[in-house]
Amino acid sequence: NAGVTQTPKFQVLKTGQSMTLQCAQDMNHNSMYWYRQDPGMGLRLIYYSASEGTTDKGEVPNGYNVSRLNKREFSLRLESAAPSQTSVYFCASSPGWGDLYEQYFGPGTRLTVT
Amino acid sequence: KQEVTQIPAALSVPEGENLVLNCSFTDSAIYNLQWFRQDPGKGLTSLLLIQSSQREQTSGRLNASLDKSSGRSTLYIAASQPGDSATYLCAVFNAGGTSYGKLTFGQGTILTVHP
Image (tube, rainbow over all chains, first blue to last red; front, side, top):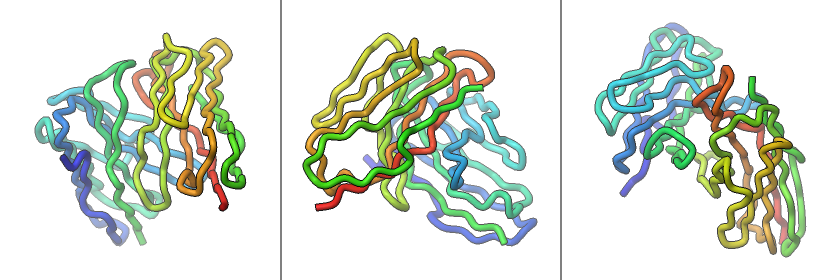
């Protein structure tokens, strides 16, 4: 039982390049999330998927797109990377949506955009 | 908009001390509050979740309390050990306002426990 896995662990992009961050969970969770963590800003929600087939914007969605590929997988795409997107990206999942459910986090992807 | 503040920003204590980390939030409309631990270069590990109807939760040497009406939570760590050294984050799952349905995180408290 691997929990939440993310690939890649590290990535360096040039401004304007595109890439997709992959996330998968093997806990049969319904809800999945993408966050970014920046010094002095804390963790901020980019997008989330409350259940398979739905996605919604979080606090900082501009410059990103997501796909809930199936119940296990939730990907984050940067279409045209900018230096402001240099950050550590975390994927998380929870059994459901509501007050009972903890969120479980992956190990993160460290992205640098030059 | 929900804001979460953690005090102190950093704490250094000798091994064996009991310590308290504080978390405050501005909007009491929350579903739950979670405490997380983050080790350098790693992801977040959930420590405790307190539902909005609960007052406290305990796990081993950790005890977290929640006073929703005053917008405060504390994480108590008993008999601290060097292995407790990490950043501790609190987050509220919002039940209303513009942050509805989202987790809002504090900036964290960096804890160092020295032998």
